[in-house]
Length: 492
Ligand code: AMP
Ligand code: MG
Image (cartoon, rainbow, N blue to C red):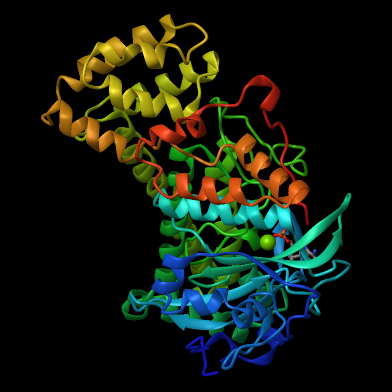
């Protein structure tokens, strides 16, 4: 058989201290759950071959494909504020890189492929539930237009993994612009390895931010570019009610993609304090803290780059501070522009942001569903006939009425006609998000009954989040009280 992956590896060309060469550990009895056909094609891969017996051997780690150079990447990271100098891929193995149809370089990684020298006490494996969760949520994010790693395939291993209980094992094939994290920089900086930091920075510039190479101060430009990318990314999370759950620096990609879906969750009713992750007992990574945590993490990145910014320490610190000072305005610009679009405002007026935050405030007090409120506003935008749907989401419907009067007044100053505005709003306010209770139900069917029908159905619905899909309208419904998910788990 000829090479099925046209690998073109560059990270494996970096010095050996950047990674450890580690092959996946074969599993007992792999079985395909799913291949992501459109993504395979976009990567220039043959989806039928991936789904073949030989393809599944590769996707499960039983066979290393031609041209792959399997490595576990070294990284460090701040976890819940405390520094861990030695993390690294403990259960993920990078097979290599391919160039996709658009000319972009993509990592192909097996997550759950077996132990590596970075596994510490872990087994190197992934349980089926978290693999399905990552598949669903990352693909939903992609369809929602959020930069994210992708899911190319999932397989079960025929082996059991031991967590709180014994669970079926699985492997996810993850695709990313790269797997370089803020924590990758921290790994070298902490060891005082200035040369390593420089090599990594040059690699990141070449791969993700080529314009920075031509800037007057390339490393300053790199830092600014990562800060901008993260600010825009986190603004998008906020617009969708997404809570990452574990925003440790080792889970923050320098490319600006959402990465490492663990106990992530979308808000149902709007509660800015919401934090679902069972391990986030202090609410450090609560919904409303995400923008500030982004800045905290980027400050750790800036510290790593100090030695590259200037030979003079004070000058380096000044440059870093200046770059970090840009974060707030990058974030606010992105956040406010997105909030306006959600409200159907396509021009800028004073008071717009206040209008938006007043709505959010009323939603919080009245337990209004985040996604449905904005979706239904898109229908109410044509006239008060649509108000009933929104009002019903508020414990005290009159809280919406007062706000709606102000909103309509403001809409009156917009040049766009009502039909165009409605269409524009519907293209940014999704009907469908991966609601936690539905994700849990999908996982339960797969784990307990070996039934992947609900998984397939949910992926079909979430592939078109902005379209009304009457046959699947119930996917838009918030949970009943008995279905509500209060905590999510990494399952690692
Ligand atoms: P995560 O919480 O998935 O972002 O992982 C944090 C760190 O723990 C990373 O270095 C992972 O590689 C490692 N890790 C998580 N789960 C396992 C596991 N089952 N076996 C080995 N390492 C793991
Ligand atoms: Mg991680």
